[in-house]
Length: 503
Image (cartoon, rainbow, N blue to C red):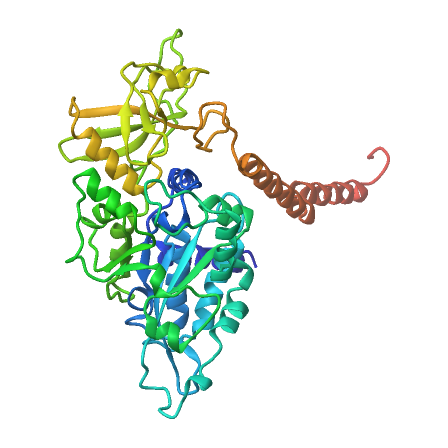
């Protein structure tokens, strides 16, 4: 029986490895980086939140008729941080909605997304998802159908995804009338949307659904789906400006909401388009054999903030007894030669200049003249280091990071390492702005996770020990068996001898 159990475990492990070996490896640092990137976006309106997406028909459903395999790819995309899904849908002969080019129903696909939402519906893991739908003309559907024959897509979304998770146009109207929206700095004509923090935690929504064209919204009308007028959806890079080399171009881009660019991205260019303010939709035909090549593209787009393997709080260098070390504070590193920046962890006691942002303007930056520790910059009068009307801050979106690159490119020296308003001083692995005394919004969840990771090895060892003791109690110890046998032999020998004195 033990061999059977070991065989099953080995099969499960090998299956998991074979199914996931082409996805980006989400180390503990990668998970923390993605979470902190989400957290710095908390006050940004959801239409300006950068996400990475895929054209699901080409990435997951093209080149295979195996529904289980296709849905497995979708589940893996969700798990590694892909947040936007462009789906071409069509009718089958019975006017049921299916994923175009496959036999998989639209409802089954939504069920996979619903399972992911249920498993991540907590402070640590919740994040926004965007579904982009387009109804395609199907050759399978009957030509005698009329719009009255079309399925109720609202009911399908409610049944397979859950209406409680969907943010609707009526909810947006209410939030705008109630003032539950994030401010749009420098763009008074831009329609306001709620902040990511309000969206995820105040009203506990997870999904927005859009049609990408008017034909789809006319054919499948639904009160829970936004029409294409809310989108800035492009399917070619010929009419866009990227890279953005000056602040005027950055401001023009910032005025647009829900910015998507669908194309066949490479691992070399996807990061630049992300910095230009677009949410990339990866559009490339993948087969079960070639899907592994998507890994490099995702690795260069999911994180626009932290450097690879960051945030790394370990301290491998020896310091003398008088040195103070606290690797819990973040800096932005900028290199003029390639005009790029990224975040890394530094010792909070090191003396560095700090980054400031103009109050009420997300794209105007300054660097303090004086160097100081992270703690000194955040003393009660710490903003005195910043110029007037500026405050200690950090880039909150990829577009803001690009505007910072443009600003630093005009300064000397050619490389910078500047404090940004981000630290994990209060709680390990919980990166928050607003100085070293800022509280972690999910401290209980982090503490519980750390407690579980601490007691798990002890629990496993105790369980194995108990099992071994039980197994030993069921077996006879050989030395005891031998002792009883020898006692019988000795007694038999002694009994066979004649009693008394021999003649």
